[in-house]
Amino acid sequence: GQNIDQPTEMTATEGAIVQINCTYQTSGFNGLFWYQQHAGEAPTFLSYNVLDGLEEKGRFSSFLSRSKGYSYLLLKELQMKDSASYLCAVMDSNYQLIWGAGTKLIIKP
Amino acid sequence: NAGVTQTPKFRVLKTGQSMTLLCAQDMNHEYMYWYRQDPGMGLRLIHYSVGEGTTAKGEVPDGYNVSRLKKQNFLLGLESAAPSQTSVYFCASTTDGYSGANVLTFGAGSRLTVL
Image (cartoon, rainbow over all chains, first blue to last red):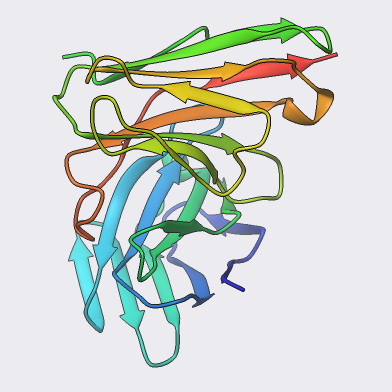
């Protein structure tokens, strides 16, 4: 079956750096997405990786290794507003999105 | 520009009642989706549409029906609600669901409780 694994919850300190990991086993691969979801709100797009390597976008970076079935989201200079759930999703060979359960990130002052 | 609008935002139903969730988008997107989100689980696709007049089943379609009579609207119906359908429902849309680079725009969600 298809599976996306990510940690359930992480805690970090304001101003620090945190890395959220995502491992996947899917039928084919057409890209990996990271979405941010604040409590009670809709998911919003953060990043997309289809080739191996690091994509940087401001304080957020996303890395992909297709051979290892692995990605991470790196958040730098953490702010209180970064407290949210981070969803990893993989598009399989049929262009269907397979979603992880999300990682709840708690930022402490 | 409203994006994706879902109504209602909250609803409480009794077992066996029926209801319809409405999703409207003003971005001229072809592809529309209905997901449900439950604690400890990833988003699960209920039904989707690749264009006006089309619908297709997703991962968890049982107990739900959909219609896409107009391009901008995608309706999700529950014919006979069950407590297992208590969830948060999200509608999403995109320009091309068969392009890996296309991202989803989500509505704000509809929280449904079935007693």
